[in-house]
Image 1 (tube, rainbow, N blue to C red):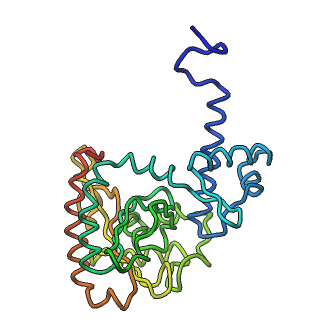
Image 2: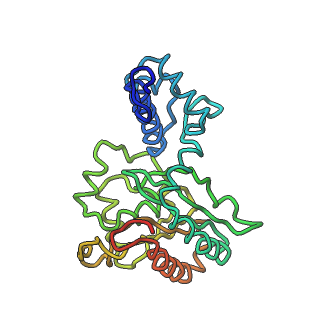
Image 3: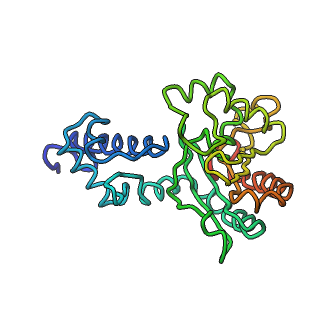
Length: 282
């Protein structure tokens, strides 16, 4: 039996087209949010994606109704919880193993502890923990999206990138005006910062995303490429799959810097066990 000329279980051309359009809209919202600039409203989304405003209005409303997008008080759009819940479901083992590790670091250092992954120039927060009763401002929402070039987690996720690869990644992105007072303003500055932190094994981002805020971060690596290969010399073994970070006020974290470095390194090694020999989540 068929319906409207289509076999059961198959997606009609109209449905597939609508899905592609919805994905383009969500991607445009995510890219804008990650850039640090003011979010798109429906009119700007229509221009960005190249569709009629009436179609953009219907698509964004449907995405908001389903929780994939959220509309702010100023009518600008951002990614919603349903999107990040779906994304997080791709990393069940990683999320399950990360919770006690993050909770322990948050309590020990009175700060936020975060697990993040990279998608292009964007850093997506998968899980965050904060000590109960204090430092709640550092927990962050699970749908937080930030740029990779001005956050500790973002820089940790790029530690294996060469200067040339960073330049290609950031091509067409405006770095000036995004982030805190110590944020990188060029691909060269970002590469230099990573060269410095790579030698120490831990990224230290002081005032890069926000004034007075420090983020310590380390990459989480799998056991290798699945083909017996290793990553570049001097960057450790395995490919970078995620980043762990501790974030808080600089004056609060500085006295505990060595302990934070030690805890992050140990937690990253433990979390790396969430990946199998092919770099896939267990």
